[in-house]
Image 1 (tube, rainbow, N blue to C red):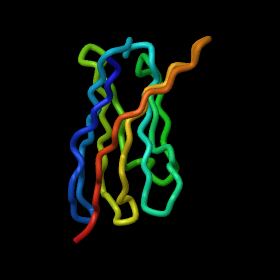
Image 2 (cartoon, rainbow, N blue to C red; image 1 turned 45 degrees about the vertical axis):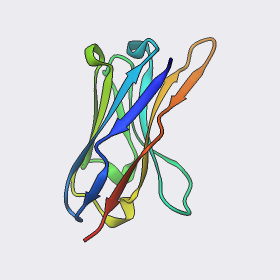
Image 3 (cartoon, rainbow, N blue to C red; image 1 turned 180 degrees about the vertical axis):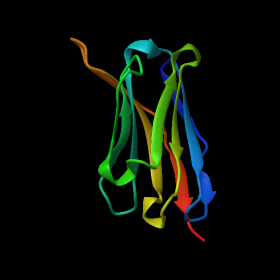
Image 4 (tube, helix red, strand yellow; image 1 turned 90 degrees about the vertical axis):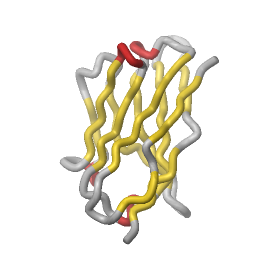
Length: 119
């Protein structure tokens, strides 16, 4: 069965760091692009970072460039998001998404992990 399981969320002080991980199973991970989204209370879900299937290209929301880093390890079916210098307004549920843009497009979502940035 397809599974995406996020971990690493929690409470962190402003200016602190967290590393989120997403463990994938049940599909061919290495051919899927992977993305991290977040959704804060009362706000629409936004794309935070993305990485291509082979890991050769990444993209980031302007608000997180220089502070967040997305990476993947295909041999372990994992994708990570290193978040540094966190801000209170980045409190949100963070979601892992797998995207396959083939002839039959597929999108898989994790259940999300809560990140709270507060003193």
